[in-house]
Image 1 (cartoon, rainbow, N blue to C red):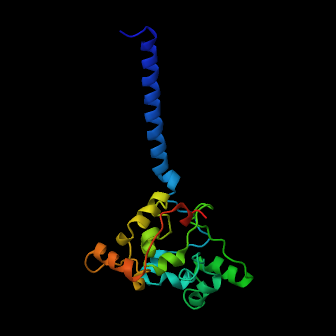
Image 2: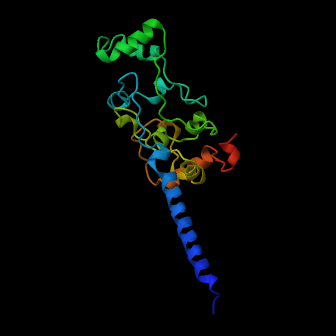
Length: 212
């Protein structure tokens, strides 16, 4: 019924199909792997600084150190002077304060290692998100429980698009954007839909929104 060459042809097609499926599985696995998304990335910092103590136990607001997060695209890294506002009087002789005091006296900034580092082709504006009711924990996780800050969320295009397509799942009142343990009163979706209108939230899903 089939010519002699058809057997070899079908064998080759089955092999190619198998290779194609295998390739797709491998690519999908790599695309979502923590090795690719850098989830869990926890670099060693030049100062042994605990967010769990400062943001958690002491309850410092994120904006005390990252004071441009509401007004600019970047969430500023605090200068050494911000640290010394407190530590000139609190635990000034602690060994952990040695690099901080050296930085302050020599007027040389501490070389913090960036944890959440988006690719250069991605545009992200902190102030827009903060002022529209997106909490810090949405992208950064429970920083108030981290001794050493690490990347808790994948920050992939899919991660961002999920929020842009369904913002009502993530919105909260502006006064609670930095509250790490915030829990909505009532139904989150109902609250989110109300805040969508109140804050005039219209997130774009067009390419230009993030790739400018």
